[in-house]
Image 1 (cartoon, rainbow, N blue to C red):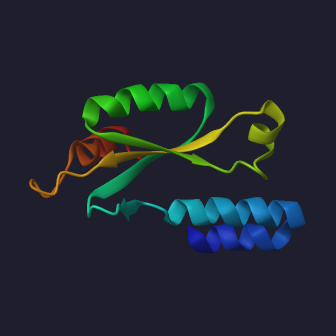
Image 2: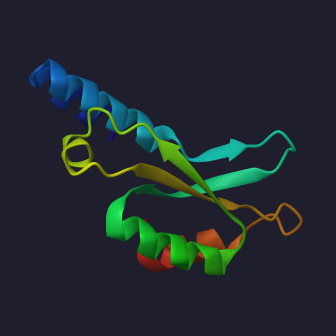
Length: 109
């Protein structure tokens, strides 16, 4: 997928290149480890009404963290004045897995 995104970037104008590169980079963001050593999995990237629905569902899966992302360059978010977010779900390292993986199997993320 990364190769496909890079080809599209090469064909666009400068603004298109910037946003497509940011989108390609976002695809690579999957997990993070906080300062306490806890592992988190990204389950959502977006905003608006979809964000609210995803957040409500993710809270049912366990501990959730919301990160606001700079939306500059994402035309639809800029024009609407909407914020852009990542939703993270904390992984249960004691079990070696977490409910997000079961959820991913269901919705095919």
